[in-house]
Image (tube, rainbow, N blue to C red; front, side, top):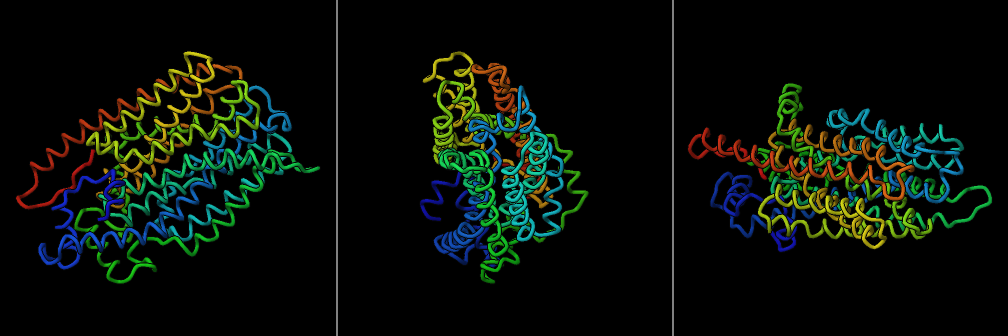
Length: 482
């Protein structure tokens, strides 16, 4: 394991002895036949291969996904509402309808992915939402916008949950949280890139195509082109992965079986799915994810409007909307070190949500521009830091079976997207410029997320003690990582 792996591995709870033992058994069926250095080298080589193919492509496509989804926020400040005759809360209705479409099929998406295969389903979804995004640039009425937002949500659903599921297939448990965190780094990066990019695109002058139309059309076309590459890059699971050699495929399959996290070739049984759905701890964990996504959504969709209402021009608001996301991206990069400092996911996650809570308090308490900008940056830093912790924690803590991984990844995205229902209806135009309702709701949700972290920590500690007490001597049992 090289130093970069160590510095990034925020999910590592596997001791060096246990890691070596698992790898030796996976390779040769004995616990003393291969040196630790050789084990680390083989694992590092395997992870680098998957990083360069699966993780890198997934992150790039996710950046486009987040950019296409949030482009409506930029379009709003460059004339979308005026051109379509939108008044009062029409914009909020449009953003809500996206969530309706997204959630309509989200929960079943991972079951479809297991049946169809990630290498076919995920690129197809990318092409679909790219086309719909581009079609938003040719609409002429708000009714057409409503329809496009529903279709955009339906075409995007399944992508994020699908990526989380295949990452759980490819990576060992002690590597998984890190990679999920890196994947979610694409969210603030998308905002950092899309803000100035959309600002530049909106300056294009054309006799018939308006500025906000260019934003939708060009971003959609780019997504379609990148999605086509997915048919040649993505793989369904390591057992049939074409860019791995036979030794690597055998190694990772045996390793994941040994650590109790089954591979992607395992069957998804309905009985196991219902068993996981009946576990209250899984549902409680999602409260923290909901809170983090609520904070991130405040920055992603409404930051241009919030900044614009502070007295900046539309162009300035678009460019400055990248600042809170940049703070979020920096927080996600360093959140691994902070998790190790805290010694746990739950404490680091609690601190991240507390930071977002403080940001919301600052924004509701004053109209002073510098203070509110700082508050927006704190909300972005805390929200995106939480996004770097909670999804990976959810998947890692529920990786004991393919059913648990499928349900955990599906619920993670489902609850994250559900935050859009709240978000779309609390930041309303009539409440500008203070947006007291929106920030008050955010404060309450952050407190709820903190409570979720504490309850999950207590529950996992109790369950781990019971599993240790009930197992036989020498038997290795699955342990929750908190």
